[in-house]
Amino acid sequence: MLIISEQDARDLVGVEDVIAAVEKSFVAMARGQARNYPVVREVVGYRDAVYGVKTGCDTSVPILGLKAGGYWPHNLALGLTNHQSSTLLFDPQTGRASALVSANYLTGVRTGAASAIATKYLSRQDSTVLGIIGTGVQSAYQLRATLAVRPVRKVYAWDPSAENLVTFGRLVAELGLEYAPQADCQAVAANADILITVTPSQRALIEKSWVRPGTHISAMGADTVGKQELDPALVADAALFVDEAAQAITIGECQHAYSAGLITLQSLRGSLGAVIAGLCDGRRSAEEITLFDGTGVALQDLVVADLAVRLADQRGLGSRVAY
Figure 1 (cartoon, rainbow, N blue to C red):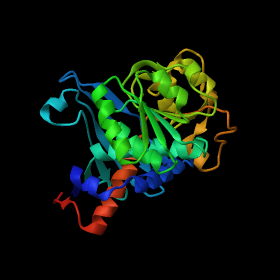
Figure 2 (figure 1 turned 30 degrees about the vertical axis):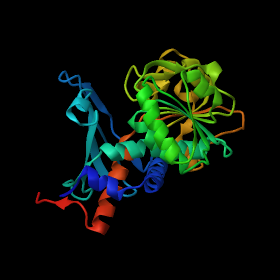
Figure 3 (figure 1 turned 90 degrees about the horizontal axis):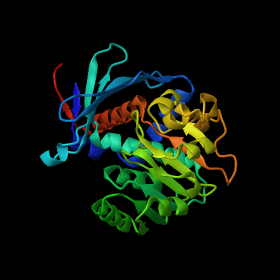
């Protein structure tokens, strides 16, 4: 079995390669060649942790495996990140475990990649102003991935933590972009061509009236029952795209508009993979508000773990153990 450490994963895998790999995975899902299996997500009852398992198979590669992990809110005091996860890959030919890949960095970069792919296919090509709601660890992945697909010149941002805003601002400056931190979410939403929400919020942070016509929104924070970042009326009014429909209406941003009866499954224009594959329309006009509900699916995790494994084989990295 090949074991890839957190440092090896960071050294091996770059954002551009991840965007390409995740994009292919979305297409495989849309064409019925890849499938995510039901998600397990539970409150542990110890250390206030939330634990989950995501699993699936892409027969076009093929890749088979699972990612397990979750959120341990007291980890920072221990010198660890709060999100912890690992991916286990299996040989699709035999079912034997073939690789164990540390997935903290890879989860961050694949989440940024999914959002960037949505931006690539759904935002206006002349979009240059990025708005980010939530400037924690994930915001750096979002910014770098967005820059790979759109010529962003200015970044508006909001976070309840002034320290987070300052830290994020250093990265924005390093990348040569203009930075405009804001005291409220409304100012961010009102100025953005591309709006990314990436928070653990359980209440709406962005109201419908704040968002300009033509804005693209990537809602990346909601991945559990109860999480919410957007006004349900905004969700209902937007052109809706998802990574996976079943997850979007149960644990994604769409869950609230769906439970309120404001949208149905038929309200979803399609999956992001269907847009990429040319199976459904993306943006239909310059004035349309497009919304990608990114819940995070197993296949995103598996494809980036497989990418790390292939690159490790090429470069002689990772550790091999008898199994």
